[in-house]
Length: 197
Image (cartoon, rainbow, N blue to C red; front, side, top):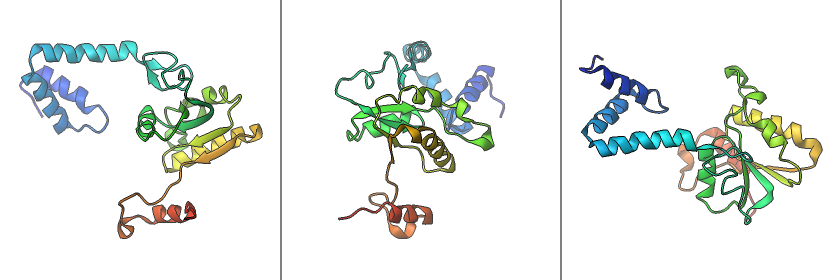
């Protein structure tokens, strides 16, 4: 599509390069910014600059933070001997919203995926191995995918000699889900993960 402005085209291209944003959404966002006053646009641009300048990886868990170590790793109320392994920082947010987990996290920033050329060296795996002294349990909270399973198995074999308890989140039927609309793999996993009442 040819826009009346090269700058509009450039902005649409930038927005549409972001995950889950197609060209139509990118176009709507661009036009929305054009309607906003200069203060809003300047603050938006300044916040994007601050985001890149200030946010970094926590030196312990690899979550995004402005403070190092992050507030979770530096908290005295967290259980230091339990680590929950997640793929991305947004997984930490999802778990934290439940207020159920009181241990620490380790963010891998990806999963092992040989088909895409992602090896164990491409994720934050060595950083995990370096933190295992005194850890009693590793909880795998990785996505239920082939890549998640490969990563879980790889890490499990790596830490097996260390006598650390290895667990994973239960998988199965979602609350409010209907059996007839649930896929076969989820039903099978629900049977495997059933608990006594």
